[in-house]
Length: 435
View 1 (tube, helix red, strand yellow):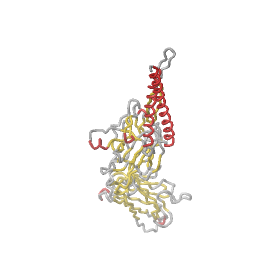
View 2 (cartoon, helix red, strand yellow):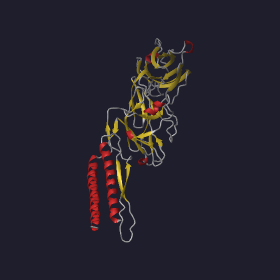
View 3 (cartoon, one colour):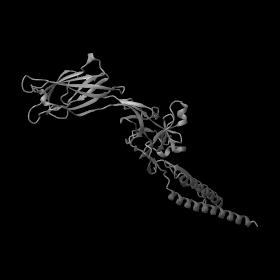
View 4 (cartoon, one colour):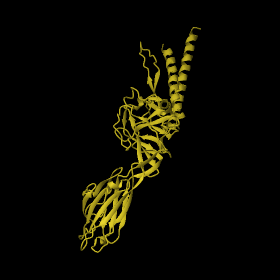
């Protein structure tokens, strides 16, 4: 029985080392595969009971484990939608064939890196047919509260590179110097017009006309102006949309700054912020003229009318030129007018036991009971790391270590083969006893 158990142990040793050689060869073959997680073979002995002073060899068995929690080095690329995860977490992806079938929500798979590019339909996908999943943003770039323990709200990230977009103007800053000499008693009292462009809700160019009319006193200087605001998009009956009486300070130290603003019509002047809100045809616009005793907006010094700082937000219609994903997983669309819009958020998926994930081809994984329940985190939040654009994760294989393990495996395999040879010779000697 002891000799037979030795033979069985030798055969088990050959099988175990063949398994280890298989994992080593797989690791070496994928040493250049982006995102590949190496496989490790563990040996455990099979102990048989001893009877009457004799020992029975139990042999060895093996278990293989894919070390999903091990990460390869990150290497830079030139593609803005090449993504890698730095730290814990996985990118959610779906099979392109399943998305094309349109059979409801596609199955969510996990990966740690991918080279995503837009296909003919605008989806961000890899050459192997994996589509990036994310949450769509609202029209204003905000996100609803999505459930984090299910993938039902995720959808393939789709980019429309032929998309046009604009942003309406919501704020204007007037940095204008009015001539102090225009409010003298001997001045002509000619109004001064200032035209300011703004963009409406459809990206069209409209004009606000701001008319400054000086108040001419009987003697001395009034230091007072009437500011009237008219909108080119509003009919004549509704103009002006705002009228204000602006008085400037003439004291030493604060001379030339706004002293007070009286609202005749339109939105009330806010002393704390130096702003008023007027309603143009498309909605409200906040106009900043500066706070009292400061020189940040309207001033009255010297003898010249000078528009010094006229600024506004908003933009005309522009075409999308590029898309990037930031470290927090937000997908930004860039337009040739300089505006940026947030269109998706890509979460990072975390599981309690990454090594318990079911490994599939294309370096993707599927949650299982061994991995535990998954949760969708914002990148950089909780236990997950962040997202790195312009980067790919290299294979986790260390070729030098694998070659060293191959030598050890070869020697162990040869030794087990020698055990079988030796047992065979001993059995041959036992057979010769009969002769």
